[in-house]
Each structure stands twice: as C-alpha cells, then as structure tokens.
Image (cartoon, rainbow, N blue to C red; front, top):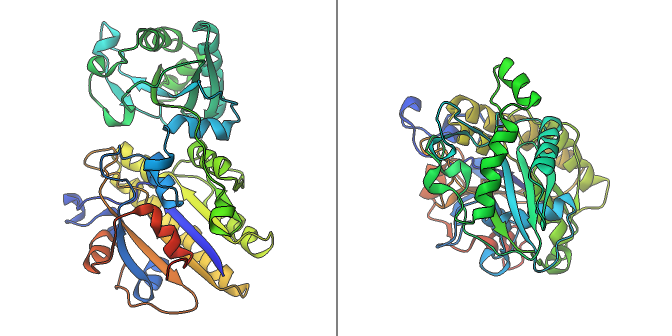
Length: 402
C-alpha cells in the first residue's frame, strides 16, 4: 500500500458574499476531487490544538503525525533545519520576513505593513538584500541566513525566546504597537528600513510596479527542535515535496527525504506538474511508501486577499496534482490511500490564519466509502466525522488503529 498526503496550505475558508455565499473550495472547478468525494471518507479535523497559535508550523506538524504540544519549539528553528543551520541548544532562531512597509509616514512606528511577502520577491533578489543587512546590521552574536523568497532567518547565539507578532496577522495596521520589546531586535528592524528602502533592488522593483522589500520583520522565535524518526515511528519510508523551508525543515528533523522540484517556488505559479511527477516517481520507482505533497499557493492567495487567485490555486492543485497522481499511481498497479486537506483556514476576509477545524478527504483505491457529492467545508462537516486530535489522523491514513 502507498500513502499520499496532498496538503493544500490555507485552502479552507468562509462563505464569501461575492461568491454567493460559497467558499473558494466550493466555487473552484475540481473534477478530480468531485470524482473522488462520493467514494471517499469526508470529515473534519482539528489540526491546531486549542490554545496554540494557528500557523503552518503547528498545523503541519500535526498532519504529519507529531503532537505540537509535545514537539513544537518554534517556527523558525524548523526552517533552520532546512537551510542547514547548525544551532546549539542555547541558540534562538527568528524568522526574518522581507516585508513591504508604507513609506509616506515620518517615523518607522507610524508605517503600515502592506505586504508580508514583498510581492513574493524572488530568492535571487532577496539574497542581495539579506547580504546588505549582514553588512549594515553587524552585531556580535547575530547572524543572517538566506532562505526562500521573502522567508529568511536571524540566529542569535545564547539567546532567549521572545513573543513576537507575525506580519501577516497585522496587514494594513500601523506597526508601532507590534514592534519587539527587545531593544536590539527593534533597533535592527528600524535600521533595516534605512538600509533597504533605497537599495537598487527595490528601486528596480518600484520601476516595475512591484512592492519593495523595504524592511526586515522578525517573528516565530524558537529553539532547536527534536523530532523522532518518521520511519521508525510509522514503519514507512517517507519523502517530502515542498518549496517551503518550514516543511523541508520538518522533513529533515523527522529523517524524511526532501525531494527538490525545479520551478517549485511557493507561489501561485509554482511547478504543480513537477511535484506530481516527483511524487509518482518516488512511490513507483524509488522505493518510498509515503509522500507528503505540500502546496503553499492557496495560503499565499488568502494572505493577499485575492478570491480569484485562491480559486485558481485550488483548481491548479486539482488538475495538475490530485488528478495525475491518483491516476498514475493506479495505472502503475499500486494500491494507495490518499489524504487531501488544508493545514488551517486562511480566510479571505481576515487575510491571516485561524485555528478552526479543516475538512479532509480520504480516498482508498481498494474500497469505496460513502462520501458526499463534493468535497467542501460544508459537506465534510455534514458527515459528523470529527477528529479532535489532528496528529492522530496520520494513524488513520496508515490504518494503524483501524
């Protein structure tokens, strides 16, 4: 038996007036999910434990079978694992977003976060900006590391975990009351604006009508995580397919293999087909039993508040990943179970995450379940099936307790 998770980051949403009370998932044209839904198990699952912040870190740990209450030590340390940063136990890692702040105000505190991703800036552009921060913000015990797109890291030697605000939680708000209480971090953020606002990269981006990456924003602090081996725990050989350092870091910590797909960038126009092809090859030719296909696009479109593009992202996943993977695995003569779900909702109305339960679809190629006509938030809730502990859903996929 082969096992597949298609993780559609941030896909769940609320009914939207301009969609006549439907969600993006209900509105999207998803012929493959529509084909699977009537013969699949549909239900709801709480991926973010009550009392924990709703993020892709806690939620994906949960989906991949690790109880966040036991294993979570912060978001950025997981990303550090992916980048290859060798953290000591006393080190603290901070996510360093390159964000777009408004520029018309007189003081840093008065500025507003316009875009948490600087228009999904390219990694090549971002690397030059991070180098400028390295030079301009030199300080003993602090080091910058390049990640992917707008997502980077700051490591503090012998540091202390501090409570910080995620930039996507305060879009359009003035930043003064959300700045770090830590004087060093706050000073570095303020100086970063002075370094980056006139950088040639940002001048070129403005000329192209793109958002400038004009400030660093620190959040997601934590210490080095320790995850148990995925293979030893579940007795299956697993691989991760993602463009996002957070997911790659979870895989590194869990001893899973990271499969790199050219053109996979975490954006709306990522290489969906390449991810599908890599998953099929891993399961049918390379000896893997389990593949986790993570797609960031619905979450990014939710943060941007784009209904149209969130629908597009869902349609791309359905047509270019769910359809080809399910069909080609079956054509290869393999029996398989496939779980499709978001990690958390990213409602268009809020443009940030919530911790509400999410809908899942579980398909088994060897037997039919009694499902619903379509897969959506509403139909999944109607089944009455509810998994309170999200980290136990993987056991259900693997049939460990069935």
